[in-house]
Image (cartoon, rainbow, N blue to C red; front, top):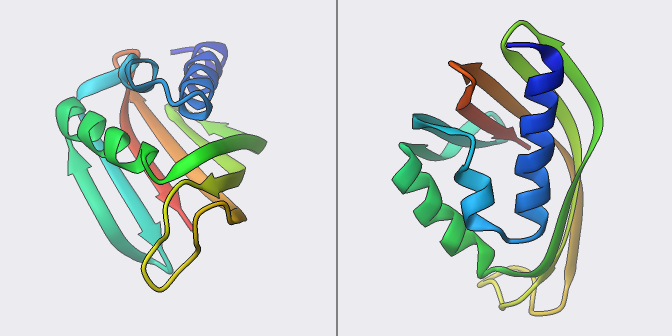
Amino acid sequence: MEDKEMKEIIDEYINAYNKFDENGLIKNLHKNVKFKNIVNEKVNLQLTGKHAFKKQVKQAATLFKKREMKIIEQTINGNIVENKIHFSGVFAVDIPHGPNVDETIEFEAKSLFKFRGGKIILIEDIN
């Protein structure tokens, strides 16, 4: 798969994420996609399969009124694309022992995408 194609798929994914477009988010996922969210070097969420991913997307969308992910740096090595991202979001709900509704969160993180057969087979969000 060419670098340009992988970049286009990731751009579509991020645009769908920012628009809360569930179908757009899963459009280019492999049916056996694996998703990991890693915080402080510990996996705190791990999913396998397009169905499980879509279910998580629906649940996560309820947390924010507005959210935006932007790529600030991108590196491609074979079929793996590593993105340094900037995230900002406005909470739609009160989080127990955390931010309240209308509070804003911002951070930089890394998001890794691995491709197989023209589809995303692995997504790792690393904070």
